[in-house]
Structure formats: C-alpha cells, structure tokens
Image (spheres, rainbow, N blue to C red):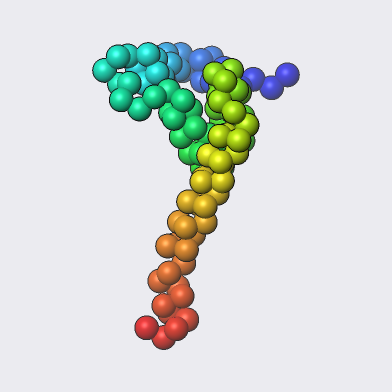
Length: 104
C-alpha cells in the first residue's frame, strides 16, 4: 500500500509534519482565524489543490468537505472556479507571446 504524502513526511521529517498539522489546527480551530467560515476554507482548499494539480490533495479536501456536509453541487462549483482561474492564468502567461505573434 502506498503511503500518503503526509505519512511519508511524518516518517522522514516528523517536525515538519507536526508543524503542518499545527497550522491546519490554527486555520480551522483557532478563534482568531474564523472570519472565513470553515466551509469556505474547505472549498478554497479543493480549488487550490485542483489548480495546482494535486490529485491526492484534491481528494483529501473533497473528502473533508463531504464529511462536513458540503454538498456535491458546492464542491463541483468550487472545482469549476478553479478550472476557470487556471484557464485565466494560462491566458496571462501566453499574453506576451501573443504580442510577439502580433508584432507588438
């Protein structure tokens, strides 16, 4: 069975794994950082993981969202926003090359 990235990190660098888990706790449990509801943080997590191309993280955030009663429709919408934003960043990345093609 393949170990998850976090399990591997715990094995090779337990202090870094612990630090990451403490940050997760800070983001989701510390009362100082609850201006954005956890529901939205999970949807952001899905979108960012998808846009960055991490299947493992996208699945982890999706499972966490489902466990917290976030609907399929909300999750799919977050994924579609990520898809749109990734597409927009490609447009930005190629803009200077398109200017070259246009002769600008």
